[in-house]
Amino acid sequence: MTPFQWNFPTKLTYGEGRISEAGAIAKEYGKKAMIATYARGGFLDPIIDKVESSLKAAGIDFVTFTGIEPNPRSQTIDKAIEQFKAEGCDMVIALGGGSVIDGSKYIAATSFSGGGCWDYVVLGDRKPREYTGAYPIISIPTVSASGSECNAGGVLTNSETKEKSFSRSEYRFPKVAIVDPDLLTSLPMGVTKDSCVDIFSHLIEHYLSSHAESEFADRITEAMILTLKDNFDLIINNLEDKEVRGQLALCSIFGWSGIQALGRTGCIPMHSVEMPLSAIYDLPHGRGMTIVIPPYLELMADTLPHRWAKLARRCFGVTESDDLKAAKMLSGKVVEWLKSTDSYLTLSDVNIPSDQIEKMADDVVRMFKGPEPDTTPGPRPVTKAEIVKIFEMCK
Image (cartoon, rainbow, N blue to C red; front, side):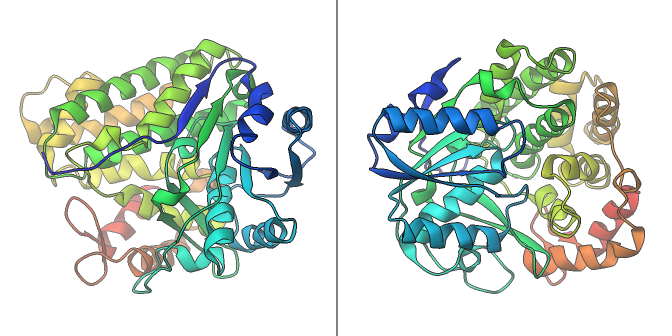
């Protein structure tokens, strides 16, 4: 195992109806909140009303910023930052999916530290600005996917340059996550499927990209993958099953919390390859990962075949004893699983033209530079030619 440091500073408040505690919880962290959420006019409207009512009952002043997009735009977040400071807010309540929670992290930390939110993201050779602190964040997830409600990471999209990137800061851990399964049952089928694949992508990234070994991390990850698979089958047959929603919520939270990588932290090549899909075409991130995962697993199987084989055997029923042969079976097994849940997709299914493949590959190696020219970090450097091949295999 490699040396590591890990903590889980977010207080996890779980249970049906616990959204009603938002006001009492907020009272511990400030006097005036910004509720950051999606645009009104959808299924979240009554949930926004409940949070506002809870804050009023607790005597907490607030402003509500609506309009954060899926794949949150830096331009929108900068507007929220301006309002946060102009209104004298001292905490952010993030109500929504990973996009809203990610955007709220940038609101809280950039309002405290100065500048614009895009100043802080990873972008090629540019040195990102560093945060000096953040206002408190309370997260209320309405989607179980990214685990953003309990971690320090966050993605951001620049709608002017068509770039999507990320940053991470210890200052941005939410203080409290209110995980209420009553809210999660409102998710439609399409978003539910995307979110399950998003969780899966997080669970396998470090598992398949680290050269270190940690049986502890492997067993935790495998247990969450098996739990995810079982509950994916259940939730698509009953979207309102609160018990199943709760199980998926825990897979989401701990699948990207760091505990799944203790002693073998790796990198995120599949996420890097997906970034142009959601940046340029505004594709939901989980849907983009659905497209990218199978060809990546197929093309890169010989990189760390013992890791691919281990995952194939323990989570997908492969019995082949030869590591390389077992490794090459993993992609097919994942495709079978995705098809069994009616989740499998290709680039043509989402109308992304093949003539953009070269440009998307250029974006990946430009923004997320590997140790060698025209590469992005992976279990070994992933070349631009291989990224092009992955996209071609997605067609």
